[in-house]
Image (cartoon, rainbow over all chains, first blue to last red; front, top):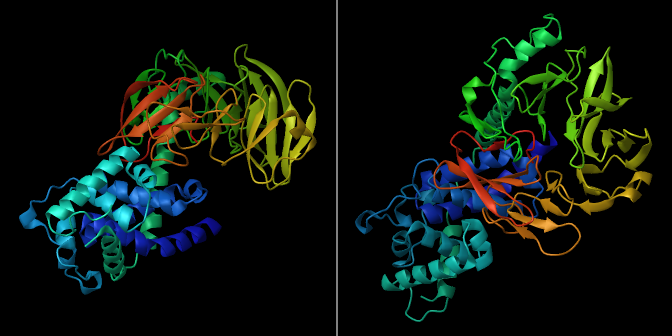
Length: 167
Length: 356
């Protein structure tokens, strides 16, 4: 069926980056995979509508992030992790998931509240504007600005960013 | 490290991650399951009819046809004064006319139900029926072929009219009925596969594989509207919302044409487009209407919306966890009244008979 072929192409093309975004926010390979997989099931269920959007990938990215933030399936998004138990992204066992560390960056990111983490990833990895991030998170641009400011302050406090670094 | 370095570090680190292969088969399998749940819920609308259907069917057809093997008790009086407010949580409950019924009471019905100010029109084994405000079910076409699968219907926002297809003696026909007087306004034979895409001020928009025509049920006038590539998404108050090539047939001159998505809806006055957002875009310039609940950004947002039978907008706004809150939003003020919570645990909320 043509629509299934279109969905398959979209799935193949967008999965890797969406997975990386999810991984950076949730910090756990299995949880990231589960979040993206779950979002794509919902995408398929509404494919006709989503495929007609101007930017289907943006729509799906939003679903992935919301899967994580709402803890829709496993409550991962709302889990509070004490700093002692925070595993940096580099601690993912599987070598194919391993990332190169930059000093204290990932440990510091992992200690951010999940919404601040999402803002950092969407701003500096996905390169979204404050308005676009607000659309993803379902909040105002002002809230994004304050979350970003708090996140950068936290990263500075943990030594991952230099004082006075531009935002 | 500066934020510029932060950007580079994130890109470098995450680019180094080898993403595991996604499971396409699982996504489609689970997606189909979600679709099935939605359809099952839509059947809820029929809840509606559940009980009455079997009873009424027997009464109307002289007991010769038993369509519902599991009759349900009559629903009792409903209140449609503020629209049908028909919505459902898959697998949980259905709300209709200010009352709530458990989903377990739903037996069947289907996604072809159409919400009207006078009740829910649904098909039972090919026969259109109306669940009205009294909670009773009326057979709109006694004697229609009961084996038909020709289900298509639309409601008119400009008058008490509904258009539906029915098959008699093997011949499909479209009927326009005045629900206020229970009189047939017009009837016209159609070919199998004809779909009713709209009904506006008594004019029916009929789509076949060859294109779309209009049929004025009062004057019997038939005109070409558009070719096969055009899809009429909605028609309200002289405004056609279409997808694909612009309608260029003779009938098009009588309407204001607005291009939009096939799953968008027009407000009853035709002045705004509702499209998966609490931001209603104007069709003829001016400011958008922003509902005071739900996301108001441009383009599709996370949430669910529909134009109710009184012209207001129903919005289900996702909350934390597996809950949404349903609102009834007045136009043009955009002021929303909370109707109550709704579970999204087993699927997206459904608006019965008015789903986008």
